Amino acid sequence: MTALSPARSPEASTVPPVDDRPPAARRRQGRRKGNSARQSRAAWILSLPFMLLFVIFTAGPVISSLYMSFTDIKSRDLRSPFAVSFVGLENYANVFADERFRKAAFNTAYFVVVGVPLTLGIALAAALALNTGITKFRTVFRVGYYTPVVTSIVAVAVVWRFLLREDVGLVNTILRWFGVNGPDWLGSTTWAMPSLIAMASWRNFGTAMIIFLAGLQSVPVMLHEAAAIDGANSWQRFRHITVPLLRPTILFVMVTTIVGYLQFFEEPFVMTLGGPLDSTISMSMFTYGQFSFGNYGFASATSYVLFVIIVCLSAVQFRFLRSNT
Amino acid sequence: MLNTKKSATSQWLLYTVVTLGFVAVITPFVWMILGSFKGQGELLRVPPTWWPEAPTLENYRTLFGKGMFPRSFANSTFVAVVVTAANVTFCSMVGYALAKLKFRGKNLVFALVMATLMVPGMVTLVPLFVLVANLGMVDTYPGLILPFLVTPFGVFLMRQFIIDLPDDLLDAGRIDGAGELRIFRQIILPLCGPGVATLGILTFLSSWNSFLWPLVVAQTQDYYTLPVALALFSTGQHETDYGLLLAGATVVVLPIVIVFLILQRRFIEGIATTGIK
Image 1 (cartoon, rainbow over the protein chains, first blue to last red):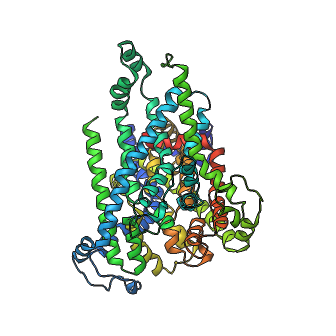
Image 2: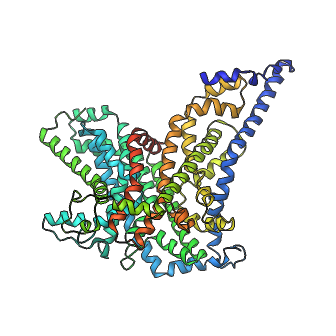
Image 3: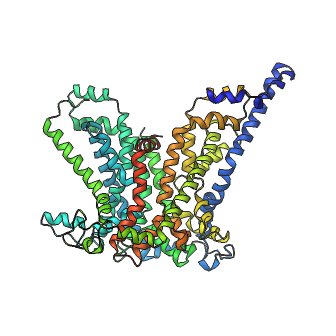
């Protein structure tokens, strides 16, 4: 309430003149009208900086990217982006005909299809463990599990590249204790992608875990107790109480994780440069590559393919979410 | 709680698994920090050493002696501070308008924000670069900063936060004759602490760690941010300079981890609320 006191200062006492206004009814009406105009003006003043920056740097580019994907714009047109020819769907036809793009699309699907369940599985297991069984050092575990999330992917990718080295890497050193000779993880077309997925899961499961933990806290203990009295074991309670109540949370986390993983870029950029033999090139890396070559129109088309996939997936999942709650 | 029947053995097992997981999660960081104090010879020894046998500051000396890293560190800090301040200010302003004010075009503004919540950075990359190049801002601070001054996510977060504040407070302010801007400044903002803290933390983090745009727009060492400097270091001539790279990674990671450990409660609550809403 102290925040209100300055409002009573002289500056704000422009209100009294209201007294010499015409009859009460008209006055009320007038004030309401004036009030809404004032609100409208204030709202636009408050929104102006955001709207300007947003239109110039986000909304505008989203639309011009779509436009560019229908033109043959190249880096040499940088200074005259409007003096380019319209080529219709040619870029899109080229995108889908491109062997390397298909490889990138396959790799991206691989990363998502394996990486998302793995990440969410670890996250859910960690959240359940911390929510039920663990009482001592709970905060320590929670903070520890979350730490990788705050770190730069570039930095941890640099570290993991060293950890995964064939000869001196920590991973293979540990495997050797158990008599296993690990492969050259990042140098192998078979193992490079699983290595990136493992790193991504390690780095990202913390976010999902925290959201799951918050969701689990909203599951009423009473329900569990009632079910336990009825003789349900812990698996049955998990399956029939926790999972249904957690479904909106799970779906939310799933959508955001999928959307994030569809765009993976830093991991291959630092760890493999998309290799060996394009086995880890992602759609984002492919787009970045085309951009670097100066094929702006083509790069825009590839980025829009990714965008459309993201939009469709989130739409489908949100519909599913709505119909289930 | 409920599982009082849980046997001592299963409790032991649970703690063992959770502790092993903890070790697995933390080890890369410990390895990184310890490794940054080792010489190249020791780093390439088989089997690897755990504790540095001959601890040396050589890696850090080289790193900071090169001139590039201190500058990148300053760039990252400067960009993150400006971006965070701008996001907190502008997003809470719009957040208030969307949460509490009636105005023409409100639904349009909100729809735009929601529609662009999930736009991948790749989609805007090309036109943004064309725009920034034509404004003559490639390889400049405005080029690094301007595209990130506001985010739809920030607006969404602040709107969700402010919408839960009681309307009575606003009405009280209006009855006292305060204008909407004044109400925002003197009633809403002081109550926005937790929302602003969450947005501030998340924005600083994403700016500090952001990679794609700085990679594209910074074309000389002078404007590299830390992740760009490290990535180009690690894929360029220093590809196998592991000591140097581990020291570089430590410089990128450690400040943010320390901040996280200090503010961990706020961080984690912030993440949890973004998930529930």
